[in-house]
Amino acid sequence: MNATETFKTVSMIGLGYIGLPTAAMFAARRIRVIGVDVNQRAVDTINEGRIHIVEPELDMIVHSAVTQGFLRATTKPEPADAFLIAVPTPFKGDHEPDVSYVKAAAESIAPVLRPGNLVVLESTSPVGTTEELVQWLAEARPDLRFPVAGASEVNVNVAYCPERVLPGHVVRELVENDRIIGGLTATCSERAVALYRTFVQGELLITNARTAEMCKLSENSFRDVNIAFANELSIICDKLDISVWELIRLTNRHPRVKILQPGTGVGGHCIAVDPWFIVNKTPAEARLIRTAREVNDAKPQWVLDRAAAAVSRLCATPAQRKEEQLTIAVLGLAFKPNIDDLRESPALHVAEQLLKSTRAQMYFVEPNVSALPRTLTDGALVDVAGALERSDIVVVLVAHREFQDLAAKLLPHQIAIDAVGVLS
Ligand code: SAJ
Image (cartoon, rainbow, N blue to C red; front, side, top):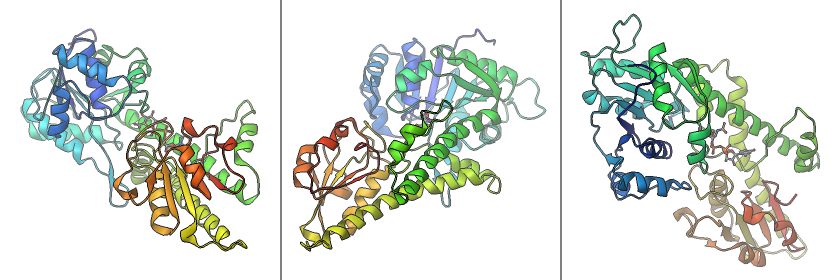
């Protein structure tokens, strides 16, 4: 086996937002891919040439991979030349990493491993997880030789290679982004480079597994810390009667300053989770990273408090309107602009809390979905025009493109709470 070897069959364990597009990329390069997922419905959908997630362009790629016979899904692992693991690594309890899905994936592939195999972990993982993965595999298959300390004649290689793609741009970023490859030995890294070279046009940068694990966590923590800075500024500026949007526009004219955008909070499945993996390992040292998490997690409540203050203000006007006579329009529910993903969304959280805490009539606008989630069905889903013609208070939670010309449409009597700067 060497760096120019070819992999005839690749198995992808976990067919979610990362695993399925990655599987489809290999299949598009005419490598036979066996996709494995515990979700029978996902498996059935993929085998029909369709997809169970929302990601631009992916449906066509999966459809042609399946119809041409290069991608097949199953619930039970089968022998292959290389195994890639892309399963969730959420947190549990008090922000402790939960690597049980990685362990379950290791236990599921162990029986079908063969000498000469390559195993790559892609899931975002706490530092040391790739070494743990090797331990789990070695316990299950004492007949194989894994890259543990002091091992000779290793015959199963293991590496860590984190995914780094942005939801909504996955198909392009999978091909174009540079990848970090942390093999447990130099040969492990070389073989993983050969595997990814089949579809990655970006650079493949070699390091060790622990550094590669920490790179992924640091990338998302970097973004979290920088968003926290923007969110903190937004709260400070509000107190000081300064527009944070103008402030950021102006400070960013300095050649070495690039402040990110304040918002309703940090959502999604990565940036709000991964920094905790660093904090959990090194709680005394990771002070800034922890504080950034706390600042970003507190932002939705700040937005809610401002909405509550607007309601009190209207009820205290000379007209003395009763709360139940007021109407509130909430614009945006997704976890970030121009996507339909409502999971782990601070905007959805604010909308739900507002609906629970007020007697006002509520209208919701989310141009990317056709129905409200179950938690909001006491309100009504309307379009921007419908919301504006009815509401006393307009709360903007996501900077969707449909809201960009909102300033010109607001009526003079309306109170606007703009968490994302579309009115500036
Ligand atoms: N957000 C702000 N202000 C900003 C930028 C983002 O409030 O200036 C908020 C968004 O509204 C959203 C959250 O942060 O709620 C996260 O959005 P995002 O676009 O920053 O990131 P994700 O979660 O969609 O994807 C991130 C990416 N990581 C980095 O950019 C460092 C992506 O490359 C990773 O692959 C992905 O996490 C992942 O899977 O880890």
